[in-house]
Image (cartoon, rainbow, N blue to C red):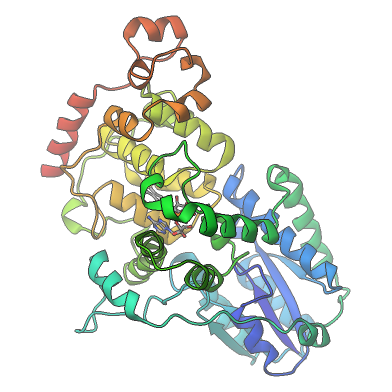
Length: 457
Ligand SMILES: Cc1cc2nc3c(=O)[nH]c(=O)nc-3n(C[C@H](O)[C@H](O)[C@H](O)COP(=O)(O)OP(=O)(O)OC[C@H]3O[C@@H](n4cnc5c(N)ncnc54)[C@H](O)[C@@H]3O)c2cc1C
């Protein structure tokens, strides 16, 4: 028997590890591990993830196939599983190329070795894996554009349909065991906490993406920076959990959309996802350390008070506050707003980017460690190919440019709803008093100079 270990690849179709396991024609046991060291309190990211597991579990149930849950410490739970099922000959799984996922894969590989069974890992989560595209001198790319120019030329792996009839023949029926009973209980507990997201459905994800390709792609380059518009694909959260495969996303677009600049602009964004995966794979300390060594000694401020005001949307900068209140409530954040609020935290408040990165990691429903670290190191100017430190976003100008009528702000800061399109970006002192909206936490001009000084050292 083969154990197919599912993680952030929550689908049957186009699942590389599953398709490879099926080629062996051996019985398959589908397993999901709830890894205790990864569990967080009060995390929207986690809630969305486990609801996606539930959606996958429901899909399996519909075809009468069980997903076996195990829960516990990383190695111990697999150790118990393999001890209980000595007829298992191999683990098949889609691997992570970086960060904690990579470390966990290595730990389980060792457990498999101890039990003298094989461990087969497959690159599935990216179009082009971290080690598949290097510069001519065999070193990793540091700058996005040359990476993209080469990436574009590579043939992307095909979408593979899974033979469901064969899967049903090979998958083993539900196994009764105390281990699985406890795993299922833990899962139920996590699902109860995650009721905010109890409607995740691959069919809807596909419909919404098809609608994007058919009706919104042409306007993508123009609309994608405006948070009040429905201008982007909204795919990131379901790519993160693997509900939809990146190959399906790529080939649906390539096959259904005619050639256009808009199509290329969208493909370019998909490439950022691979680029940041590669950057993190080659800079494994980037979760905690500035990639650019010259910025490792910046004197960040560690003001809990200002950090909390940022988290709660009480900075007195309307676009930042609207974004952060919306984020806290939903776990979603538009790319332009991520850039604005990350810049505000690290430049205007000069607070350590690691605090922001951590908060995002807990709350973003599309949380992906490589893209999140990449985004934060970009915004704080500490990463590879990052925003230059002297180009500091002005939060008021960003608001005027990307939310000109204050549509987004009005939605999340209703107390400012009566203000004109001009005043809404920077209410006067009296308006703030009348509307019970906070004064600016810091003067932007002063903050800008403070950040420039800190970066210059
Ligand atoms: C500070 C910061 C943190 C971020 N954290 C994450 C994160 O944890 N997870 C995450 O998926 N994205 C992250 N991003 C990137 C980006 O904001 C989101 O991918 C995007 O907003 C998702 O919306 P969408 O699917 O509608 O994007 P679209 O514009 O429709 O793009 C299509 C896809 O391309 C990929 N993509 C687009 N932009 C980027 C980018 N800059 N970096 C990497 N991939 C990209 C995503 O997979 C996205 O789904 C972060 C950006 C910043 C500035």
